[in-house]
Amino acid sequence: MTENAFTCQMCGNCCTGEGGIVLSRSDRVRLCALLDLSLSAFEERYTHGAGSTFHLTTKEDGSCIFFTPGSGCEVHTVKPDICRAWPFFLGNLRDELSWKMAMDYCPGINPNLSHEEFLHQGMEYLRARGLIRDCGQDGARSLQIEDLTASLKGGDRT
Image (cartoon, rainbow, N blue to C red):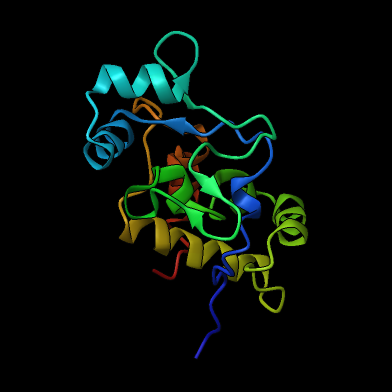
């Protein structure tokens, strides 16, 4: 049996620092429902951005507005897709060096597996949860991996 490429350790490292969490419309709608806010009220209170791109506001220390040290994510059940996808982002899937750097930052990434196994498990995880985006969709570009998906068709084990 293959080990998991990622098991969340609930450390909160992915919730801290200037991350620039991009919110899709479906992310914003889910968050509105949980917080009992209208879309416009949510966007005004919890987002910033330019044009049609909405970024989740951060606290003064750069951490996510919904992250509380010691208790974690206040919106975990409806968290943004980019948060659901961590650490299976385009850069970490495509580039072994990015994956190794993420491993230094995230104790949940299994160092005993190869990058190839991380890639295959990551693609399976993203597909199973409907987190792969086409370039035409809104939301985080690090989930827009159709070019990676196409290049894997021949060797993908899923």
